[in-house]
Image (tube, rainbow, N blue to C red; front, side):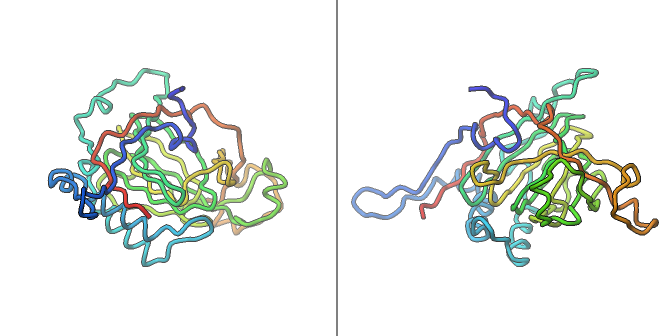
Length: 277
């Protein structure tokens, strides 16, 4: 199996260790994990349990109360909570002049309702401008400094989009700046909050993503990629106030960029204790 995957295929190629509650012999009660495992995985376990409550499946968006609940947990999480440190060899790999370094990714947990993934970006690595159809996504920068650019489509539910996907679409810029860990969790929604975004690492970075529901080609949630075009560069019929033109850009859907290829790696950090439904 190739270890190169697209952004939307991350969860399909990563092997992960699964642990679940097991019934003890004779008593029918679940056996608890060892104290050391509980201590090591506690913040991650809290996140998992919260996501079980918050993500209700396709077509649903978490309430503001639920979003705040997940954000509180993520805001308090550190790199060590998923087994990372600044001393990892990944963060010491020298860059090669003229070569865009490849992003690596690992999946901590995956279900039909949500997934937990970590993206590793060497300095100067990029995750191209891409969307999250029908998804609510939490981004937590665990390590490093990254430039984030994010847009929302002005007519996100426009039915003509599916008929003419190649026609540039008007978008409003929601973010364009540098973020440094530790910082607050960012949240994007199916049609707002910067649903279409891109990352460029200023220094080596690690980003924890919580996505609900995850990408799924068979369910119509494939990842699309875009290039942004200044508003005044295209003579389209939309007209905005001159003083606001800096906020508006055209997004043109493109093919899968080479930079979207990622190296899949196995997750070796603290384990989630899965609860059977």
